[in-house]
Length: 270
Image (tube, rainbow, N blue to C red):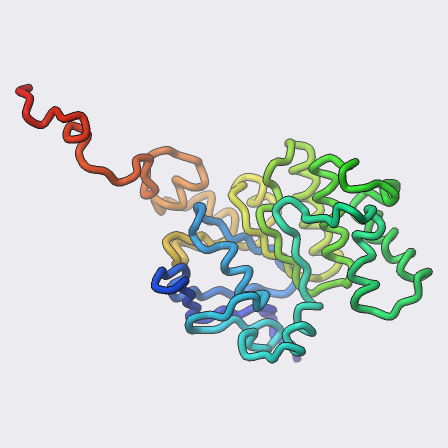
């Protein structure tokens, strides 16, 4: 019987040379849930996605996906595992020389032996799910930012993955497109029974759609909980992040010597 958890991350450490990025991360992500990973820039959120996908090996600890320890898989097994995953990059990353239709069809043609007639029906089905079936003939340069993000989402679900990872899916979107993408993430997760991981800075929009939140700061899990627990948290870091406050554990000023010294006022009499 399959475990309730699709992903288990245990004592995960990762460093670039001597610079520690992740320091003993522990997470679980249940099947059919939307999980948000939040934190400041450079806190290791995108690195965590790369470790889940097997693009990077951990320094120590492990990521287990659907029962397999990712970094222990050989090349063929890793590629097979990745077919169970989809990825939505920050700005869509569509193939600029391919039409909307061919962008969504790409994985089906690359990884299956389906006849072209079936691929056509499946592509139109995926585009219909994101509201863009009528745009199948357009080129990426003819799309708005929100439309491009939806095409990328249709492409990421082309092979009905067990997991989709979203790297900053709300960046650069207007309020309408932002809401559309958020609602699509929630609806597609529920409809397809997959797991979604959303790396994002957009706290308010994310808390509307996710089931659980992890806050990463300085390479560790600073806080975690349900959306309501996060909203109600009195932990200084969480409160500052959720409410966008200037003062808190994350300082406004970069560390520096005393201001008077920089202005050469140290010897002046006050």
